Image 1: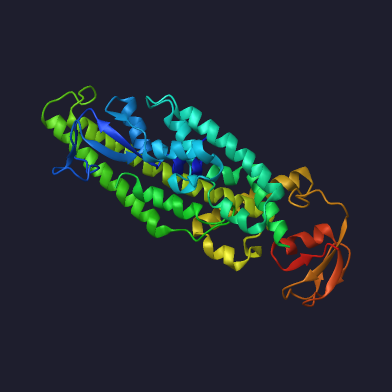
Image 2: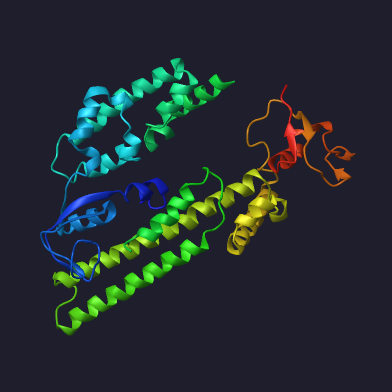
Length: 165
Length: 201
């Protein structure tokens, strides 16, 4: 309830997820590939998370993992988590993942999120002390919104500014 | 459709600097309300359709029910976006009263332009409430938001300020680019408005 007015919470929930409709819904145009004004049972549609969550609570849809958590991202995180451009995949990578985790059948999502975060956090702390201005600014463009907002990364930003003086 | 306009409104808000206001986006605001009306209209027509088919509306879970549900959820989503927009702006307006000054006319004109008339009204009422409380308590609460190290500070005047300003211990004329040694509590309102800057050497 305390997050009702929180802008970040609202923006996270706007991320799209693929769902499978278990029930037909009349009079709605959310399925662009449908010929009639409805979403047919058995159709696969991309809808915003806030809608998918509510519909899944009422057993009208089932949620699948979106593309930002697919095998390609997992392999990249396994290879070198610190330099994966998570922001282009999903600016709210961690928050979105945390919200999805209880709703999907994939049990490895939590491990992916915590591994990625631990490695990237460690890298950011190292960067605060060692990085030159140019590499630091390029590195900052890979960070998700949560990473740029939390204190060690802000410190990293501050260190980057100090290095320019 | 389906919460998109509300989302765009909030994206517009979030694209500004944190703690800074952008001009009130009345165009997107009105479009979001229009989208809510559309959702409401479609929701009502689906419910009417179910009633015409003599179905038990609260308990029957047919295709029309799910369509109506999606419209209802979209309406609630847009409502949430509208409320969050106004709420977060109000938070910044309250913060202005604390940081910059309690008089609406003291606010720099760039900030005043970004407020709607309702927000200005809100600012005035908030200031009145604060002043009345500070009067009762007997302390000026909106000075020294950061604990000061020294009661006196050195300042340089940046903008033209009216002549013959009466401060707590003297009357001075503030010429542009001149430097003065003032009490922190006197200088703070001018610094907050960008008319003076503190010299920290």
